[in-house]
Amino acid sequence: MPCPTCDHTMKSLGRIEGNRTLFWCWRCGTIKANLTNEPEVPTLVDKCRTFRKYLDQYSAHSADDLAATWKMAGISESINLPGDRS
Image (tube, rainbow, N blue to C red):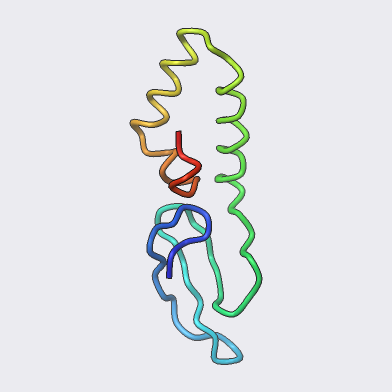
């Protein structure tokens, strides 16, 4: 099952009540039970997305360096779907 937060393959954590399977994304931390509504975005992912929006507001050289480090560290890959990665 693809992660709804970062599109990585989720791992099964086993069965829960109602014979549903609980899935976990080891890349971003999203937990989702199949046959449920959208999962809640992990708090750290949400905070990183907010910080990324802050970085996008600045065009200074230091912000560009930070953005490059952000991408190199794989943070963008871990908090966004492929179409939303910069």
